[in-house]
Image (cartoon, rainbow, N blue to C red; front, side, top):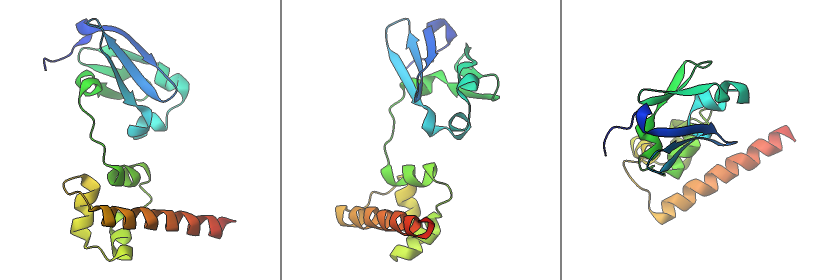
Length: 140
């Protein structure tokens, strides 16, 4: 894919959950706000104060930017890694110990270099739910 620059962009806008770019060739790309911590923490006004600048979208109030090419790159979906990225207060090493999974193997699940078996995935999902229930009990 050729490099995408500001000359290729028709329009830029912010939706409730994403920053969107439409190219002059009709393609529309989206980057989810939840995938970028500075954007997740930003106010709507800060998000809307953005502009296309050469090969990226720049958020002036945040001093942050996203590459235009990223809007059109295939997205990896790694649900295990996503949980630990969205909730950095969860400690992946401690979670691995809790399950009895070697930490290096669990780290590979988190970063997507290895994929757990269906049985292991079910075990991980059940443990995440168990932790959620335990948290609810402690604050209720």
